[in-house]
Amino acid sequence: MKVRPLGDRVVIKRLEAEETTKSGIVLPGAAKEKPQLAAVIAVGPGGIVEGKEVKMDVKVGDKVFFSKYSGTEVKIDGEELLIVKQDDILGIVED
Image 1 (cartoon, rainbow, N blue to C red):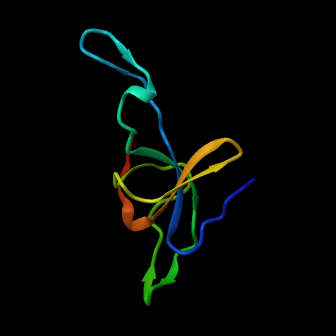
Image 2 (spheres, rainbow, N blue to C red; image 1 turned 180 degrees about the vertical axis):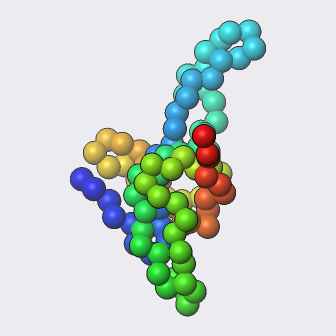
Image 3 (cartoon, helix red, strand yellow; image 1 turned 30 degrees about the vertical axis):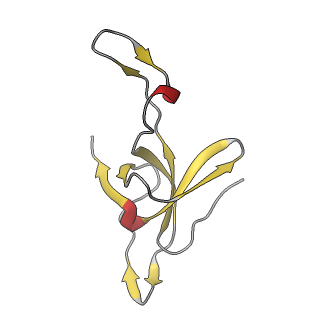
């Protein structure tokens, strides 16, 4: 199933990474805080949102940082995704 976000919405997937402590202990995903780094899966068209023109600055494949308590969590085909407004995206990670 594909999701096509509307307006200034962006569908993202959290990037899970194992974390190792200084002593070498590997922390599983459940033992730490959820990451605020995600990959962009789908991007809405932008346009006029609440009377203002919105240009979409992110694109599919970007890695982004997003606000901690933003968005709506959804589960599609067993995959946990997050739908956020573009305003909730804090920055794009550039390699």
